[in-house]
Image (cartoon, rainbow over all chains, first blue to last red; front, side, top):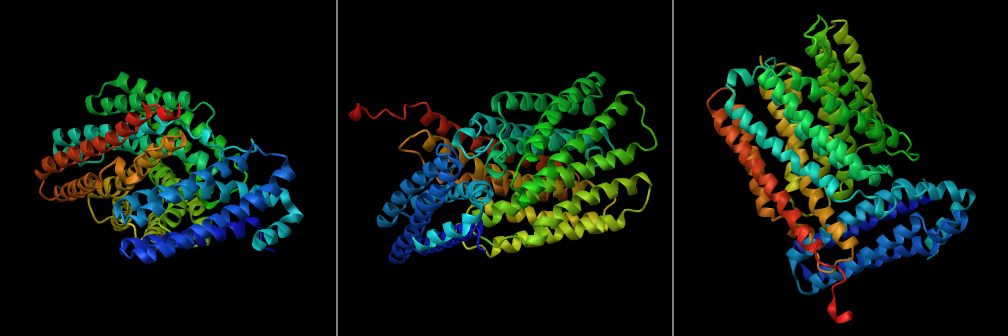
Length: 144
Length: 422
């Protein structure tokens, strides 16, 4: 059975790869491709946030009764990342490579610090608390 | 608690890691001055008090200083382990580590005995406080990753190294250097270097290399078993030393393991998916190469003196990695704290420290290592090596201060100062 932890961790890695391939396009100054890769990355990242916020976090909060705890902080960090996406988009449109890499580095650090917290604590907690419902939560996330 | 480590508020205030990071290059400058004024035959003789003083300026003032600063930042993120009173904790650990290191160095340099007494006391406070809390916090972590497991072993090694160090210090105090003195000295060095330093670096590498460079993971069996094997080998080694057995087989085991670690790390970095170039990548690669070279020298026992080995291991492997890490962490923390406080115009990570100057630092650092090594054959070059090392550390300090000042300039403004909206 797929756990929340393995499913979402895998999705993190997939987003990381999208991110890297977007950076590759910018490094090669291939701006059109960069825009496409950015759109794909943005799409997948936001989809990942949705799977968490609309399905997994909801289930976790209902089960534990904790709405002000870890999920709240994760939502705040998602928000922080959403804002950086706009900056990246602006840099691609103005073809500002140096600024792009400054911003992309910030996003990378933020993303990885966030991922560590989720992968090492929240996902493991969610798997433990949701027990028998894990399969359904994973399925609901996939259906989104 | 349930949500420990998941809140932004639980990251320590920025002044906590910064004070440790800014102190390390100061000790680097001091160490450089020390190299400059000590005769080569004295400083390169591992049994001379001057050399022991130099080693401790490095291991305490630079290595432990940066590790302590970084751990206070990393434990909440990597392990959900939060120090409850971060400022008090940092005040105690930083002050006593700084004073203790200075006093211990003063004892070895000028044979001031009272400096040893007070210095050992300060160091005991710093290290026992740090190891007590890190053991307590890390062993409470519920969900274990290979990084947390390695960090637990690191925290135990910290404690063991300190106990051995205090035991050695007490025999210096009573001038009671017994037959088994060097057994304890060697064990202290082994637990300190392979346990305290390398185990932590392994644990961090397992996490940081794959995540931040979008690179391959270290193989799972390696991540899960190797730190434990290293830990166990340290005890076996202690027993072998105590019984006066030949430790060649253990040296071989350590060498094979660390070579494999360096190889896997370099392979992962070379095949990374992120195109991004930054100088910290150079630091990582240099560091892992130096680890490999120094382990081969360690195994071969090729040199009469351990001077070259110490230079390559301490400056080449450890200090390179620490500098690279600090250059990554400082801009991130500055940026992170500012954006979290709601500032709108924050420089990007690459704008806090001009990459050009990090590169200069790297070149100076590498040149000083090369010259230190060549000085083994052409002794007078030690002066040039020492000067380069000093300049390199000054630049390191300036670069870090630049970032901190940029942070302060912005932090001193009001994030909500958007007059139009008032």
